Amino acid sequence: MPFWVWAVTVAAIVGMLVFDLVGHVRTPHAPTLRESATWSAAYVGIAIVFGFLVWWGWGAGFAGEYFAGYVTEKSLSVDNLFVFVLIMAAFGVPRELQQKVLLFGITFALALRTVFIFVGAAAIANFSWVFYLFGAILIYTAWVQARSGGHGDEEDYKENAVLRFARKRLRTTDEYHSDRMTVTLDGKRFLTPLAIALIAIGTADIIFAVDSIPAIFGLTQETFLVFTANAFSLLGLRQLFFLIDGLLDRLVYLAYGLAVILGFIGVKLVIHALHKNELPFVNGGEAVTVIPEVPITVSLLVILLTLVVTTVASLWRVRRDRREHLVAEAAAADPTSLSDGERTPGESFPGSGGSGDARAGTVSAANPGRRDH
Image 1 (cartoon, rainbow, N blue to C red):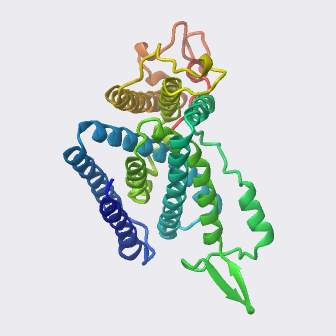
Image 2: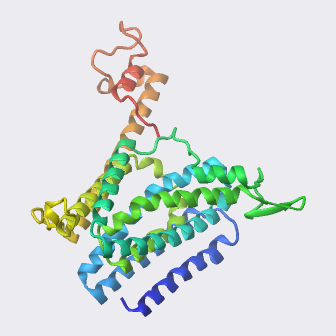
């Protein structure tokens, strides 16, 4: 990749971050739904246009790798928003200040991932066994993701070691001081809760990078595409946070969908590692080509299909739960209002020899552990 392409791309990304800072975040405010939707669509549009530029300049194969990486990274970013919501709630960050925390956190994440990307690219170029390591990380992450089963309403944010250290060793205030990160009181410099919330999001980004970077390297080994797919997935994440903040709890199956995607890419990495094998204790150091490598077109289709199925299933589940919840409330308020088709077999109402509380109990038993939204 020519140096000037790197220079133009990095300058454009930095320019968009500066535009966000000056044009949107400099004056604290809570963005409207329309504002969030408009700018989210704009950033997604820029990412798509960039993909077509890759297609035009370097061919459909590299464009497919970019789009597969972008969709995967964007999906993982949406999952990360769950944690951001918990952090904002745990620190009581005022809504008009959340933009600044998110933008600074996103900038930190981009800088951190850039370092990880170049380190990962150097490792892959020199040690083919790194693919085994990345594959193992993704398969384990997929297993943990599937076990978690998503994000429940009862889930609380748990502070990590870095944040606990910051709270213990640094002077902090209990109250917010507008959008300031530090404040001087009685001649001493203190960190505000806004700065602590930023530390929380920044350290969370380090954890997110552990599965994000191996996932993208499982789809492309082109450093330029890995970087741009990550950058464009993070750009617009601030607007996306405010756009789907109230809709996150509807994606009840997102964790399972991401588990499928991460597991698929993990297996893909292991297969690629077998084709590049140099480990002496695996087939005597010779390549294992019994299982063919997965084409990028198949990878992209699997990712898109998984996300579509996950989204549709999540919305169907939420709609069903809401309907059952409304039926249960109606039954508790006025049991006689239910039609015969809505009654469970053997159910009767007061005056007919049965229990008037049967309907509510039947609904709860029919769907134990149901989440009401």
